Length: 157
Image (cartoon, rainbow, N blue to C red; front, top):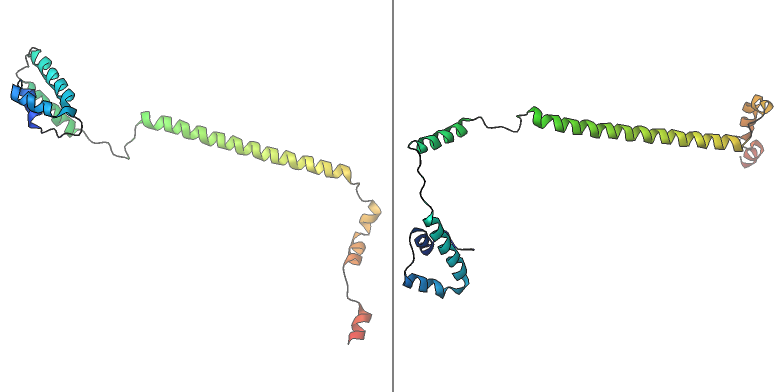
């Protein structure tokens, strides 16, 4: 059965009738498939013992009508949507966006809290400059800027 084509004449014979002794001998030559053929033969025999059930007179017409109805139904395209499909996807999308927003807000809050702790730590370790130093801040800043030495420049020229 495995790997054999379905159009095997011996298999079709098993489905239709019992095999003769010569046909069974031919199957015994194929030792690897004998178990499969025996199983197939027993299955066919058991199916043959089942009584034939009566079929309604309009069975074929009903089957063909069902096929026509199935073909006449509009096919769902990729863009067709329904609430049963859209609602769960929308709920998952809203939940993901909500969790992402809450995570970002928590991250920003932690960053600002860390910045506030660092500022408080820095303010507590260094004393603030006195008011007198702040009054002369511009003069002190000008003194710290480098200027060219005019005497040295005059000697170089």
